[in-house]
Image 1 (tube, rainbow, N blue to C red):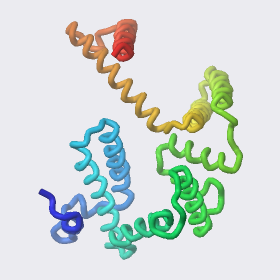
Image 2: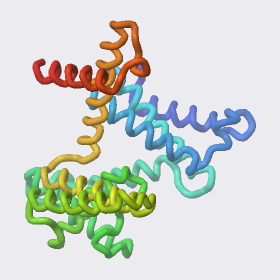
Image 3: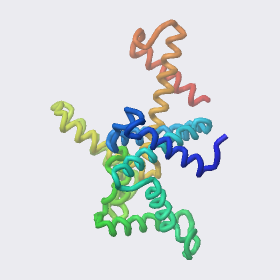
Image 4: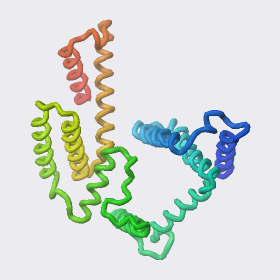
Length: 266
C-alpha cells in the first residue's frame, strides 16, 4: 500500500535524482533536456484526459503518476541548471491558487461559479499586465493544440466586443470560407489551400465556442466515433473472411451505415 503523500512524493523526487545522477544514472535520462521531454509531457496530459473520457478510473492513478513524473522531471533539470526546484514550482501554484481564490483564503465575499470564472480571468489579466503582457491576446500559449488556441484567441477578442452576434452568424462565415476553399480547388496551390482550410478550422473553433462546446473534445468525440465505426466495418468483413483491402468502397460504406444505424438504435 502507498505510504503518506509526503513520503511518496519524496520517494519520487529521489527516484528522479537517481535517474539523472551523472555517474550512476540512466544513460537515456541523463541526456534529456526540457525540449526533448516536453513532447512526453504533452502526451502524458492527453493520456490522463483519455482515461477520464473512457471513465477508466482503474488506469487513472497510473496516468496521473506519469504526468506527475513529467513535472518532477522538468523541476529536476531546472534544479541541476540552478534555475529553480520542485519546491519552487509547488510554491508558485499554491501562491497562485490562494491569490486567485480570495473568497476561500481571504476576506472576499462568497462567489458563485460564474462570478469566480469572471474574477479568475480578471486576475489573470492583471497578472499579464504586471508582466508587461498588455495585449488582448497576450499570454495564450502557442504550444496548445491549434483548435484550443483558436478558441482561446477568439474568447479573448470577444471580451472586448470583437465577436459574431450568435452561432448562426458563425455558420454564415463558414459558408463564406467554404466557398473560398472551393474557388481555390482548381488552382491546387498548396499554400492557398492550407490558408483556406486553416480559415475553416478557425471558424469551426469559433462555432464550438458560441455553442459553449470545447472544440478539442468535439473532435476527440468524432475521432472515437470514427474508430468505433471503422472497427465495425472490419468486424463485419472479418465475419466473411475478408479485410477492408478486399472490399469495395460501396461495401465499406454499407457497413459504415449499418454501424451508424446500430448506434442510433442502441
